[in-house]
Image (cartoon, rainbow, N blue to C red; front, side, top):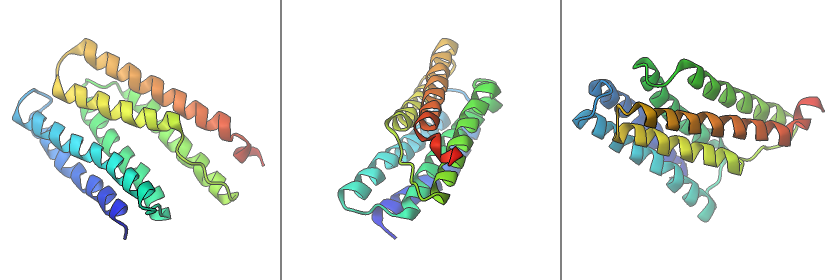
Length: 176
């Protein structure tokens, strides 16, 4: 197993710790919320570190290509689900994110069956980064409704844009 994949597995392993801290915070500012933020930040940073290591040291593997985006999705969806439970993140916004993730994953599966690999696009990376940064902002400054709505808007807009771009650029995979 490569170093990059081990770092990705650390991100997955941090998710339960993040959830526990979030639950104990109850969505309020304080020690548990800041611990949750710290765990989320470390997990988010591993996304950039494992990608850099994989590319820079030639550690790109099929396992890493599978696990890295899955780890990202699990981390951010965990955060969104927690906020949804607390009534901060609307369920419709979470469903937009989930729908995009399932649709793009399905598109990638169809493409692979036809011998095409759909690499992560620039807009998908922007979506992931803006989502992670936005969720960090929500944890760092909890309870400010207008700020939460700005973050939610950015998440939804980047999600819709990147999902649309994936389908426009790869629609032929569905019809060939």
